[in-house]
Amino acid sequence: MSRTEKIQQYIEERFLVEFGGDMTADTDLFKAGVIDSFGYIQLMNFLEDEFAFQMDEADILTDVFVSLSSIDDFVARKLAEPNSR
Image (cartoon, rainbow, N blue to C red; front, side, top):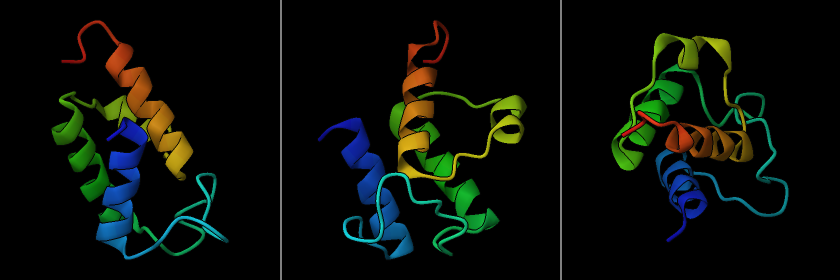
């Protein structure tokens, strides 16, 4: 399973949504009512555990990743960092 598929599967199972149709990889999950701030923290914890990287305060506060594609891009950047694992 690819990184994107793992993230998508987590979001679908945890937040009871399904991508396809109106819900796309670029849908703003906050505006769509899928994720709230508590759910966002849960998602960030999942990403750290699943992909074995640590987020710092700047990661959490600088950019709020609101869509599947932006979350996936963020994980790719974190995994590419020299000290991410």
